[in-house]
Image (cartoon, rainbow, N blue to C red; front, top):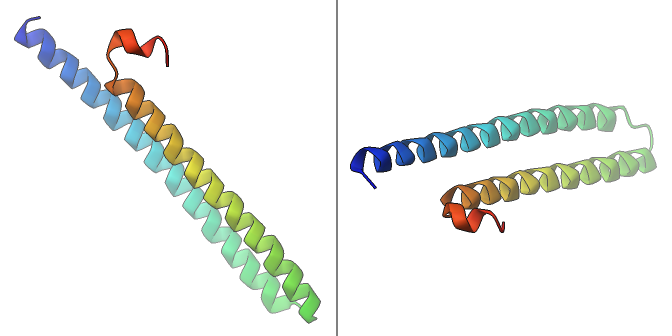
Length: 97
């Protein structure tokens, strides 16, 4: 393999890695924004709660939402790790993954 070809392959791989990371960062920012909005909604609901039981129900729903958001963040990280692994494999190893 020539030096030029190797350089081109490295540039392509670097471009693919940058695109995957940028996509992951965009998804993370969207998830963070949605989580912040849900937190403000929770605070508004909590402030409007008339009984302790309502506050407990709002809190339970909010905690479930936060756990779902954490799951979404985790899924995004796993997806990024898989993409990066695929990019790092030799072409012959990619077929099996």
